[in-house]
Length: 397
Image (cartoon, rainbow, N blue to C red; front, side, top):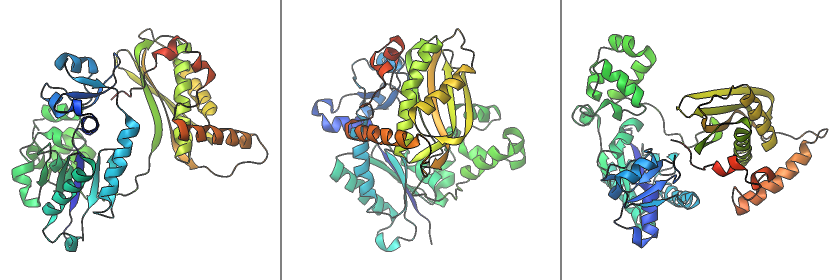
């Protein structure tokens, strides 16, 4: 059977939802993200992108480039609801869907020739039309024999793109593209490739493998060379198991004392505990992430014989890890807690206080499901000491 993978990517998703729902925002630059001094851009509308604004850009830089834009903190529950509507539409077109994020995913169309009498391109056009008619939003679609090429294709004609890449198209369409367009090539890898003279995907595809392995290391060289040749055998995975569950917070102003840091960890531990329990997970390993004012980043982790999912246990573990770090004078820019090494919820012991904790957290989580994640807050945070006031809900990109 001829293999066909389709990648759907919603165009400027968060900003597009805002423009759809607020007539006064239409045809105007809209920027969604953290509005604090250290916030970053989550999404910029195409009107804002004309001014050079892009995702992951510091919000301060976005304001300088496009001062007349509409700046919004974002309504993420609403975005998730729209995302659910979009994926419900996609489920009508393929039984195999892999959700990458709220605004993009893969569909496996292999073996569906009878449902695509006019071919995969026309099928992609039908998917775009269904999304637009039912949500009022625009999607770009890429279709190819594998995931890498499909994702690459969806980005070639944005916005409102529809691109099909076949194996025969690779030398003409893919090879002239810059090496950074390979999925997974970030800034550092791109710089490293350039040092050795690889600036396009085609130069990597035509490289001698022995030389490439010597320059990049065998594993990375093989990975990049295969993708550059258009080879990618990864399947579309309908259920992707999370390897970790966590939360990070960037602060508008650096924290300088252990007391301030532990106040921040109290909030983080509550959010991570809630997310673990909501996912039906308990974590054997707790990791603390700390980023300083100069962007240097440190992590510490500890693995526990009994898995954790209750807020106070996660908080105690995080504080213990923090105590192993000597706080420098440069200040703390970011803190994060994550749990991994998952264990199922399991059976509760009849001989300790875990049943009391379980009843307590069942009640707390019920309130959070009904009224939102912040419905129940620890008393020290309600007092709003200085560190709590500085907390920002913006994840740093």
